[in-house]
Length: 466
Image (cartoon, rainbow, N blue to C red; front, side, top):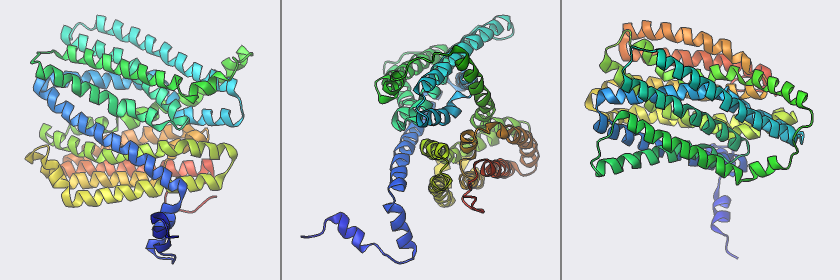
């Protein structure tokens, strides 16, 4: 009988010790193939979301103009920051505790954990909204239009918080599409479609009206995600448990969960506001035009950073299971696969930008081409981050997430000094080097801490501990 195409391809693969044999063995690894397939799907969705986001920015600029567009972004930035605060860091620890309680068959405790995270998020969201509303009433210097826009932005924050929280739960149960696609793809697509309808109908809208449309879309996406979670085996699995009988035990566990979660707010703020913090400091020493060029370069480079984040999140459930079992060899193998994928992708991306980065920047305008060198340096910073491994996630699994606070706190101070100093002396390239140095500091420092905590090598290179 003739060989199938798959058998024929396998038979022709080299069996020696060369590069071809290494590639064949890697591709034949089911775990690696699954990781590559899923990460490609999610990263592809992120790229499509980025395209939709670019189209949204163009449409907003044409509808609103520069000044109004600034107000729109200010309100959304407020929503993002408040959303992280509302979440109390729970999304970052969800995979760890879901894996732990599932392995120990403590479904009642798992259900209590999920209920506690949702309740705390809602209570903090209500408290922050009340405080913010009171602050707006006492703020006499702001225009009524600006106050209204900021209020709508604040009202969007709870939905952002629950998207992240439900996404973390879906990710812990390996429902990756349900975790990422609603926020990455559905939300920007719906908002761009809404603006397309407005443009086609030649309807004049204000910033507040667009923010209200965005609020409706975000709430709708959040409700859809929550409903889908209830229709999957996630809620079915939780429904198998009975409510915990000992309320004092639940209260004590709630305190434990909050102690683990709260430090992750600092981590989330650092990672989410990294670009904004850098540009804020550069605003003191660089002209506005250079800030715009640097911002575009940083956003392009951070597309690779998101790819790193996606792959780290995809391997997190398997890593959590291996950690709970005490399988250091398995955990090390999972991390090595993730590091190989992310580092290779970032190196390939950097090489691509060396040759065609100037053409990519031309899409934004001829004046942005001057940032080509800065773009390459910034992409190198993402390769450094990839090579250092998923240190924050591993620290969370080891229950030592607080160890990241001194790292990120120190790096915020270092970032402020380096961005101002190198930016003033060397312009765009100096600012990019500042980001590269800060990334090198925090990623290698945190990798060393996480390696000691987990007992396995986190970075792609170094002495193996397992």
